Length: 244
Length: 86
Image (cartoon, rainbow over all chains, first blue to last red; front, side, top):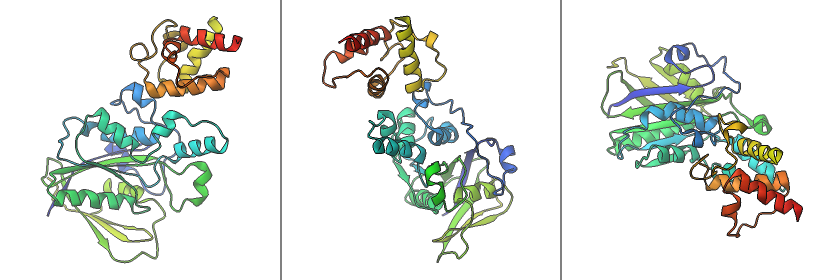
């Protein structure tokens, strides 16, 4: 079954349009406190979102209008919003009451839940994490839905580096960024045929940067294929030259 | 009284992370919930917590009067003053 990537939006501090992403490389990752505007979110709700949620809205915004009930929405993030979780744990440790807002948004699907509420989505949604293989797992989930008859799937992936106390446990280079991809069984103008293959066995040399970082570098570059090495698998993304 | 009003307004802005809202934008007499600032039930819980921290007041979660206390900045001020006086 041929699968087409019809849209790919990405945001990171200093990177929002395609021209900027073309300059991006895994060698120099953006950092800093810059947040996206996320202007599609009503201000009364936006104030509750950390950057982790705001950037997800920023990249997914355009797909929220007229999204069909039959097209699943998949959200993925390796660590979730650890800055928020850490604050809650800190309050607990200090015997302080928990922030009701912080608590209500501390689950992995909080950004996805708000997105579906604001956009009045009735499509199936799922939020997932899969270690270093998170983006590939979410992609596989999307492909599974397409093979099962869905016409298109929206995949939203958001990453925020681990909260500072946990930084010592980081096993890959991370950056704040979000990515929204629409995969479909029929091409639209500007679509590219794409394929993700999982090669058996763990790689002896896992990539130094997160899978999302590597994907963004590859997708906005020119190479027809890219291998992502994690400690579990070798994933290979390919795109056809016959983009329409 | 104006000082307490401003303290409460500042607390609302910072605790609820209101974007692009200044102390001057909040009408002391205007409703905080539903209309006016348009706050919701999670904000009410968050505000209750902040009032306890900032003014050391006790809020009875089951009190029917909470709705009245939380109506506006002015009613919150009266509530804080009554609590701190007792």
